[in-house]
Image 1 (cartoon, rainbow, N blue to C red):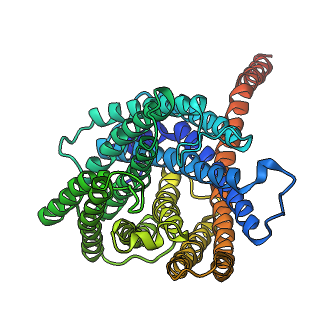
Image 2: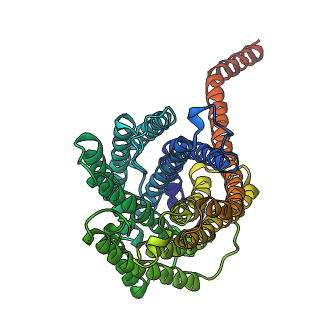
Image 3: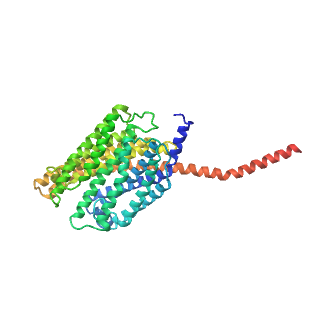
Length: 494
């Protein structure tokens, strides 16, 4: 496309409208990703040397691990996904970002809520519910911030020029509705008007399954479909054919219908129909998982293979593979014959981390590294580091989640054989050492990702500063030029 054409200028204007909201969302998200992985490494060290932080209550495992999970999930995944959703809606709508002030305010409120929530966890004020550890103050800030950003996204979606919906629209619009629904419902039943007894655990299991599996799948797959099929300004875009569109729609409905049933452990002390219903839902989720894999393979065959340089398509292919593996692990946890063996081991933790770090984080980082140059108007400050970051993430998640999954299976089998607990723990320790190495790889990748984001932010701010200084100097230069011209005119007159 010609850079001087009206279409190109319009695209540049649309991209520029997203600049400040994206810097607020992605900059804070990159920082929280580094913080979350740092806390995860510190939590991991407590298994290698249990008394390493014995004199500091803030750094005990019971506080570090929930803080690490929430920093990664709420600090990076959700705001990064919201930023990419805003970008995709702008591209598919072929319009500027509407109400851009709302995402800016929402991003700052969101990061403030994450900060407040993490401090509450570290000082011992956690609610005790997994994935809902934030107290009321942090939760209210997160909910209000999400609504502000979602309003801007819906306004941009409503202003679209092309009325036909892209397959990404289905997943991303559902993600914008899904999170406030499940987050507000869980907080109301657990914090505002708490239910009693085992119902609290049921509500929390329901939220974890809907958030850590369904919502992450909606956001990650929606982003992936946009880059697989291409947007309106993509010269290589092929768009989905009728068969791909049908398969994508089928995977969308089966995901939200069956995925919402899951989450109740097979050994939970609840009425038997709840684990049974959860097992049926988990078994049926294999349909959207395999369908998404089929759609991704068809899209790759249609557009051809691309060199893997850490770009969005490469990240999406790896992310889709990790999503399929994570989904199969999720189904295994819901199986009545397999779940009781592995549900109280590291296997369940490995499945959650593979879904978050292996699928959603890798997809979002690839998308962000692709869209930021278009938004900022210049290339990545350290483009080679983006490729290094990509392979560090891939290597890290294989070592981290893979070692914990294998160790969890071994742990479950030994527990079933009634081996002494100390013996079981000692047998899993080598796998945990490998997982800690994987965490270090992920941490290095997060540092390189943050370095690129902050480098682009600094470069843009310096350019803005130079523009302001040039604007301030302009009147002085104009007056000096006028005086010189007047002096020259007086000389000629004499």
